[in-house]
Amino acid sequence: MRLLRREARDRQEGKEGQTAGRRRRAAGLVPMRIALDLGGGPIQPALAGALEAARKGGLELRLFGPEEALRSELAMLGASENQGLSIHDAPGVIGPDEDPQTACRDNVDASVLLAAACAASGEADAFVTVAPVRVAAAAGLWHCKRLPGVLRPAAASLLPVSGGPALLLDTGAATDCKPWHLLQFALMGSLYARCVMDRRDPVVRVLGSGTRGSGPGELVREALPLLKYAGVRFEGPINSESLAAGGFDVVVADGDCGEAVLGALRGFAKQHSLMLESSVVKSPFRKLGAALARGVFEDSAAFGRAIGGGGTALLGIGGTGVVCRATRDGAAEAVESAVRLSNSEFRDRVQRRLEDVKTGMQDERA
Image (tube, rainbow, N blue to C red; front, side):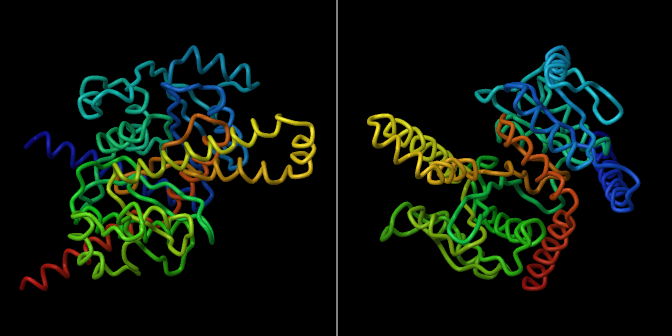
């Protein structure tokens, strides 16, 4: 009981610190502070991208990872520790093959945990990490806890579809989902589309099956009645074959399916670019054609970068967390996403919406 009281007090203090920080930033009194976890990945490209985003946005960075390596890479990039850039030695890493919950308990000095703790305490306004999605979600839960009423956090990634980017969630944070988890994913995804993506009336779909003609699985069939009355603009199931055609703003799925879709798209986009490059060198005429059609190759590369572009946002935790790819563009975009999410009303609106849903269910039972 004493432990529960302490956790509740720490959570409240962290929330108050985050709220106060948002007010100070709105008044122009302090810059936004980002806790950046660079443990377990190639440091230089992600660090270069984060520094670029920090300079452009007037941000402060708290760097977490092996101190010696961070100082060395900063020197190579012509940067150094100063008032807006601090280094926190965190050599511990949680690997992708480790059980996240066990690792969070046993490896308390892991860089992703320390970065999440920095955000939870209010010393940073958000954390950005190169850790795997499940590890990052576990670290966010460990320190930032859940938003009140949230059953499971979700990882949300952007998909480049016809008509503009759409949000796919969950992409790996939650496994063994239940129908009510998909309901909450739909609520959080719709509010993210409104608050962060500026979509006025976002269309929500649920990933139903792999191909046309095959009906949705048991999980989706059980979730459909909940989604129809969730208070979002729900327009039914969609199969993975139809995703690229767009026509929606948010698509929800259980974590395993969403992760598989995102990974498959990234793999195919990468392979497509490699096939184009290898095809070009087969003859001088193709090389000439490639030179004339340079824009096609640039568009192909841009499409690949846009899959999961802006990082993967961790929705439903009591703070702001974004997972990024360990590349220059990936880190820069993730830092910018963290700024937008932290400055938005997303978390406040999720709490209010979940409270409304809870009240409505209680009224119906009464």
